[in-house]
Structure formats: structure tokens, C-alpha cells
Image 1 (cartoon, rainbow, N blue to C red):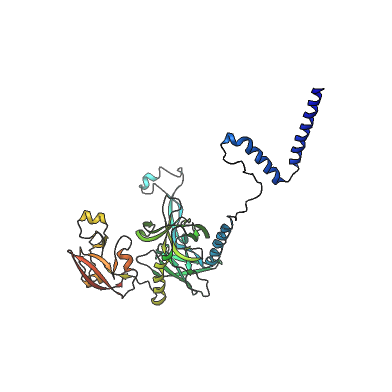
Image 2 (cartoon, rainbow, N blue to C red):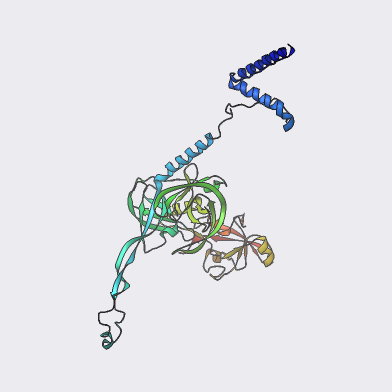
Length: 423
């Protein structure tokens, strides 16, 4: 009897537990989660070292603001910038007359005396050798550029239009084709201005490259590989005030100072195309890539081109201010090794390329001498961040600049009237 009573109690208790569990399963999901979370915490928290038994697990989505909205805004800004600038980006093709080479038959024994040639008869196979059969106009390269005035002025790289024997053709974004004339090539910077005969063209919005900051978005547009027109690539500004040595076919080797570094992909054919900010403004002119690297490209700051644009617009040529000295920028290490009296400035010194002071130059007329150390230009100190050449380039032909010079340990000042750089 006692055992039967115990069994009855056990059955009732089991039914209650089952009912309780069933009730939990038919409750709302929030209650289920809370119940099982509490149960899990109460049973296992002592073993897991938990400090609280009130944690709950919820299947509801987070109420935090979505992180993707700024990404959408960013993508739209890139699209808008490209739409704004693309109509003014052009492709430039380079064409030259090249020889037509064919395989022409020839007799390798023609120099033998006739009495020996008869032994060969007509049994030998026909021989051929390359020979020239006239010339033909052929596309030999390509580059990019962008329209800076509605009447057809286009800015590009000097190395794109360096060959004076070549002809140049411009393809605008709407597919139209124009013959181009090279108006001016900058003798110092890798910049040039060309002209097409038309009107009413869209133009780029020129920005301020002095305001560029590391990490900001950079957009490159150009004729990638000379084949894929108006190719767009996006990256960031990854370096400022770089000095690079660039080289290429027909242009030799040159050192470009103060350029912008970007990881936006710049390919052969992109040269001369614009580097944009998110406002669609041009901040640089794509000019070079680091060979063997992954997306290390360089662009000339657009502020350096503004003087060229203005010069061509007003005078029809690019006028570059010229002082006429060869120099070495002094660093603390150079100062120590050369035992110089100062650790900054520009040491006027000759090189294999010519004398320290060019005869009849503005510097020569002002009295600058070899081994002088030019310390300042109009009060601006010369150092690694402010090179003499860069400071001179901020002025115009005909401007007078005051040079502070250390000569034999004594400070003197002279004035020089900047001239147009000889071609």
C-alpha cells in the first residue's frame, strides 16, 4: 500500500514537471530564452566561474545603428565624383610612321663568281630575309589627359607627348576624335599642355593639392594600358612630398620632387590622367608607378600645374622661374661630414653636369658664388621639407627674391630677378 502511494506521488510529480516543461515550450520565444538562459546559468555558472546568474540570451536583432550606412554614403560619393570628372577625361594615342618590314627572297651566293654559282643551279631552297617596303602610320603608345578649358586646352604628362616626330590624337569621353597640337612642354616638371580645335567642352574642377591629407580617398581615372578608356580605380593618399626617380622610353631619367603617393591603381596609359578627391576635384596628375611594387603610384600635385595653365593661357608657352645654381640640400649628416657652419640650406656647388653658378643667370647677376650656402628665400628657411627649387617655383618670371646667404661664416643678403628657364 505504501509503495502504491509512493508510485502515485511520483507519477503526479512527473506530470507536473512535464506540464511545466510543456508550458515553457508554448510560451513566447522571449520567455523560452529567459527560462533556459536562467536554467543554464544556475546549473553551470559555478563550474564556469560566472559572476552573475542574471544573464539572458536573446534572439532579437541589435538595436544599435547600422554601420553600413556610412559605407553607402562613401560609395555614392565615389560614384558622384567619377560622374562629375569623367566627361572631361580624355585618352591620347601616339602615332608614328614606322617601316613596313616584309620577308624578301635573296640569294646567299650572289657574291660568288658566276663560274661557281653554276654549280648550285636551281636545286637549293629559296632563302628570305627581312626588308623594308615603305612606311605606315601606326599607333605606338597611349596616355591620358583632362580638359582644363572649354576651348580645348588639355593637361597631360610631358612624357606622354615627348616625341616631337609623333602625331597625337585625342578621344573625348563621348567617343569623338580630334587631332591634337602640343602647345608647351614644361622643362622642369613632367607636365605638358596640348590643344584640340573645338569648343563647348566639359572641364574638370581643379582642387587644392596643399590641403591633401594622408588617408583621404583618392580616385584615379585614365586610359589604362592604352586600351581601357576611363578606367576608374580607388584608393587612399598613402604618402606626401615624395621624391622619386622616373624613367621611360624616349624621356630618359628624371627626379621628381614633392609628389603625392597613392595606392589607387595607376597603370601604363594612366599617365596624365587626373587624381581626384571625393568632391570630384583634381588634386594631382598621375605620372609614375613603382616598378615591382603593389599599387605604389605617384601624382604631381595639381597646384604645381596651375602656373603652367595660367602661363599657357596668357602667353602661349610655359614660363618657369629660373635662378641658375646647382646645389646640394644640407642635412645634419652632410653638415657634420663636410664640416659646414650650418646644418640646413642649399650648398652651391658644381657637378659633372656643369658649374655651380650658370653664367649670366639671375644668380650670377646677383653675385651668388660657388660654395655659398643659401639659407633662405624671402625669409623662408631652406631644408629637406622646403627645397630651394620648390621655393623658387612658387614665384613668377620677373619676380625679385631676397636670398640670405652664409659665405665663409658670415651672413649676407642679395637680390635676384628670376628669369625664364632656358629651353
